[in-house]
Every structure is written in structure tokens, then in C-alpha cells.
Length: 329
Image 1 (cartoon, one colour):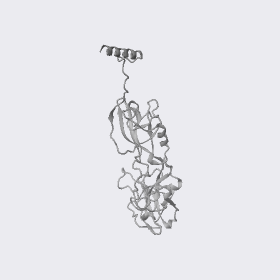
Image 2 (tube, helix red, strand yellow):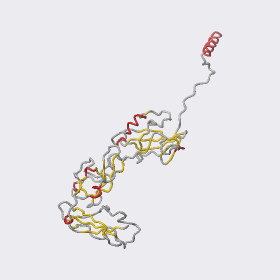
Image 3 (cartoon, rainbow, N blue to C red):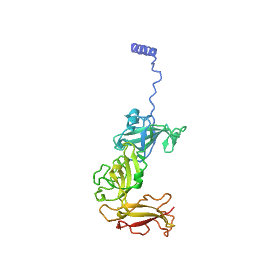
Image 4 (cartoon, helix red, strand yellow):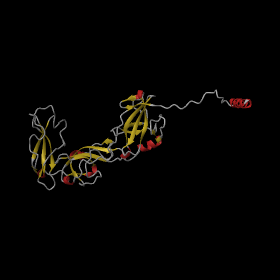
């Protein structure tokens, strides 16, 4: 027993020479952050992001134990350049750690990629995003707001012409049907057409009042309304509409804008009638070519003020007729 004790003592001395005596301090374990607050977990949202390249995407908030890499910083920057809306990321949830760090859970429209990314510190939070206080513009973390649609000014032709469908039909390709939003421009992905068939609208007249460009795809969509039928219209690719030549007064319906107070004629336009018909029915003109500074309706006016077509019949209006449309400034 004495020999064993002496042997152990010698081993201890030898190890002590290497600086690893049993009395030395153990290595400190890695310290992980903990999530102290989670926000509601939305299935989808209308808040979209692109990436700054400052932070990577993880399966959990990056400083939490067990977090694994989903996409590197460079891979996220590559996704910024995606040409299809399916790869647009939407915000889904927020998490805050005990260190004051904020993380966002994000996911692509097509649900193929999701994860958590650092967004900044609580104390840097401003205007719904987290920015550095000294700039108020530069994102503090890995994400920045992204808009899937960009405004596109109407052309002179779009402001001054009526349109018909280029190829009325049932094909879901962006040119034959109308959409609540352009395809893959929102969290619902491929937006369902609000009209399953436009075959019955082949002769209808449309007016354009807005246009957007899909940022990723780069193509242009217009917002069009059916003059002749209620509830028909929405987004459609610009190639889905063809301009109608202005008809002669005898072949269309002349609409006169008049001042509701003075009855003064302000300006006029000729509305085409349905192809092959001698009459037309008007649901809306959507303020087409309305005089500058005038409006066609207001809640503050009494019922004695003439506005719109003011009780004139807009059903089965004969070609060659005139209608007065009253507006106010």
C-alpha cells in the first residue's frame, strides 16, 4: 500500500511539472444566450426582407445553444439577386435574448428556406426596424425592408386610351386573368385570379389607373377596371391589354365632365361601345381623364349637389349619345 501511495505521489509531481495539477482551475464552459421573449409565430406576413450581408441565417437564434447554419452571409447575398418572387423572404416571428439581441424568423414565399437572423439590439430599435442610432438608416443587423413591387408611372397612352383584353381566356399566365396582386409579389405566393375566366369579357372596355413593376422579375403589371361590368378587374400583365383607337362620336358615347355648381363643360371623351353592339352599359369610368383639381364624389356634400352621372341611365346607352358626368372641386 505504501508503494502505491508513493507511485501516485510521483505521478502527481510529474503532472505538476506540466502545469496540470489537480488543484489547477478547470476550463470555463462556453456561455450561450437564452431567449427571454418570443413574439407571436405568424404563418405569413406582409413584411418582407432582403439581406445586408452582415449576418448569416441559423436554425435558431445564432447565439442559442444548438443553432446550426442554414445559409451563409454570401449565400444570403446571392439570394438577394434572385429573379423569382418565390425567393422573397417574409418576417414570421421575433425573439429577444437575455443579452438584448433581437432575432427575426424569416421564410421564403415558397417555404423552401427558413431560419433565424440577427436584427440588432433592442436599444437600437427605430421605426419598425433596428437601425444604428448614429445613422437612423443603416440596419444594425442582417436584414432590411424589401418591397416586392415598385411604382411605375402610367404612359401617355395608358392615361388617354381605353383597352380590351388581348387574349381573353382561362390560362393562369398573367395575361388572360385578373389578380389581386401580381404572381409571387406577396406572401400568398401565386395569387389566385379573382376571375377564373375572361372569355365573357372579350368585348368589354377597360381603363387603366395604376401600374407596378415586379422587382425580382422586372416585368410590368397594370391595374385595370372593366367599364361595362361590375367586379371585373385587377392586376394583369401590360401585354394582356390592347389599346382601342378612339372612335368617332357617332360610334361611341360622349361623356362630358361638367362643374356641378356652374354646369360648365370642362372636357369630354368618347367611350367605345361593346364590339359589334350599338349600345353599351357603363358601370364605372373610374375618373378617366377627370379634370385636374376635381373629384367625382365627396362625403361632405349634400344630396342636392349633382355628382357622377346624377340619375342618368347608364344602361343600354346608344352609340352617338351624350352623358354628363358632374364633378366638384
